[in-house]
Figure 1 (cartoon, rainbow, N blue to C red):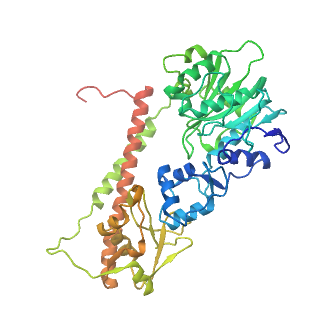
Figure 2: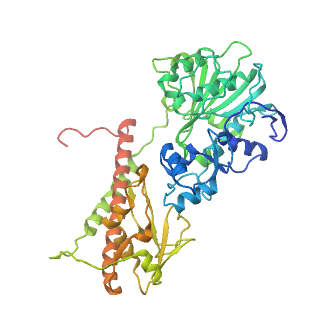
Figure 3: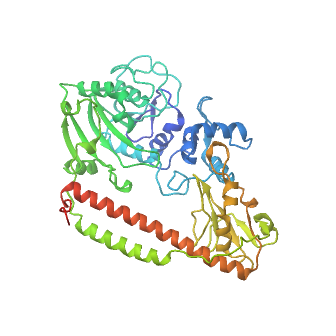
Length: 491
């Protein structure tokens, strides 16, 4: 796509790139903002469900109700996001917290990267986007635009792409091929802004091409970004020199920057460039060592922070939590003979009206059953929440069934085993088949109180672990930045 900076008028169509990769960019370019694509590739479904691509392929073969493709070529079809999410939820395949699902505030990679790329482009120029949706590359090797933007996909470029200027990339280095394509379409003196996965900056197989980019003086800037939901990314800014190249690279470290505060305008970038704690101009020769790693955080020296108050607070919090945890340690009463209760399934409890499956929000007292990622931990909601993604929500009739009793016995070994052992190593629980003891409400509440205490203990133990990590992290920072020194011997 070849448009003016208004991102509204199409003038020239350029090469095919899988539609799923660039849908976020193209949507933003057409509308001047907005949301990312409603379609997913198989690889994106795998990331969404936290499984391997082979698992997605198996689902398509074994489950007739798996969503049908809605677009893309036969070898890389795309699927409707809503249909995929409904299928994952209906089949007990939880979507991980922090994933890129609809109705979440976590931005998708494409949203963040497209806005960053656009903010780095010169104003008042023509912009070329190689992801236009056609099937052919131009036969002539042009300098087609003063500015090129691209989110480098993982797929190799189409046949005939101009990727050889700095050498053919390795089979796992598709991003370095797209970098060369973007530069090939850049006019003399023009700018190419390319989002690449972090691996492009460090993978050994890409060292030779990184060397040639530096020696040619075309790589002018590397921006390290904070972790995005789909993984680590960088932005490379390249130019095709119109005069003698400047053999320097501006290294910008935004790896610890909040996503919501990333630069969005030329003025924002100017402020980042002026910040010595974020930016450093590095001579190319300094980067041409044995590994040629393009990692801004290794070249930008951050501010030395006095972490003494932070460590003092962390130690106090840890000590308080450990003291309280010791008092919460469970000590159930012992029995001489193991109990043998009559069991009832969840579906039988549903038939009697003792509980129901809720399709909407979870209310306080509801039991949320998630089974994924090697864990099976039903919990009782403490308040109303919309965060029920990937969970079965069980609503108890309180004068018949105690919520903590239900949640506790759903965690039993027999129910955990029922959830495990499915293909692909994932958990797939049919919660209706889970079994709990049949006992009077008064006895349920006795067990429910015990389970409530155990769950509170588990939460407190988790808080202690987090506090211990905070103490460790803060002490390490102090020792490494000179705020602290090791204790004297004998102290």
